[in-house]
Amino acid sequence: MTNSHSSETNVLPLIVEPEQLVEHLGDPQLLIVDVPLNGDSYRQGHVPGAIYLDYRYLMRGEGPVPNDVPSVAFLSQLFSAMGLTRDTHVVAYDDEGGGWAARLLWTLELIGHARYSYLNGGIHAWRDAGLEESTDPTAPTPSDYQADILNPQAAISRDEILDKLNDKQFAIWDARSKAEYDGERGNNKHLGHIPGAVNMDWVDAMDRQRALRIRDYAELITELGALGLTPDMEIATHCQSHHRSSFTWLVGKALGFNIRGYAGSWGEWGNRDDTPIER
Image 1: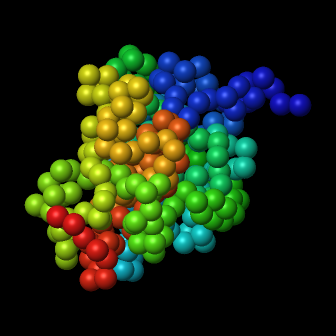
Image 2: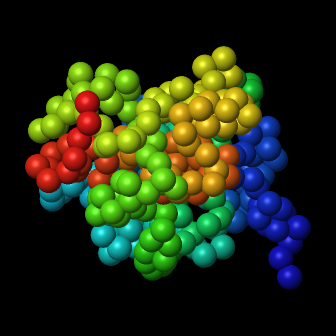
């Protein structure tokens, strides 16, 4: 028999508002993780009880595609160090509108850990709501977590994308800036975009008037639909390193889309000579 407090955590929605999360602070089943782009952000103030995660641990960091998923052995070490257990409900947030927080959540999805939420708007929304912050670091309680890629469908590979390029039920959401999409900027061997991909910059899914929370769902569905991205399709999303596109993956998931993340992203696609490119 669990107490009512921990069973309540099970119903935390995928996208949790600051006012909802504050009611669950201190819940033993909750692991709140701050994954800031700027390391100073956590020291300056964080959600009480949140642990700090260096975002670089979410990428392989070596080899031909350093932005790819780390090894299962590394993920097991990482999630054990963070104190993840099968019963833990993870709430992730960051200081930049959701990119690194979503990369963590996408990684959890990949290993089949489905109990997670995104704090909508991250630390900006927490502050916007006038909620209390802590400057005391929280040390995680280590666990023994064995990670495995239990949900490979969360990811999509270069080869799968190549196979699906002519499939009318398949679409690609390129979350980079328009200049990168158009091939006007970037520092890869080749510039441009995957043939047929459509572009909505990840920041255009954030509401700048509401502390970087995700924009109104109905508006987003309308705009994405106009680009040819609809809930009945299989959608792959990417950016340069699957950081920005982790956020668009999360947005797609929140909207009920069948969406998969391409971890290789343009860092892989644009540096090869055998991948088709449009400009």
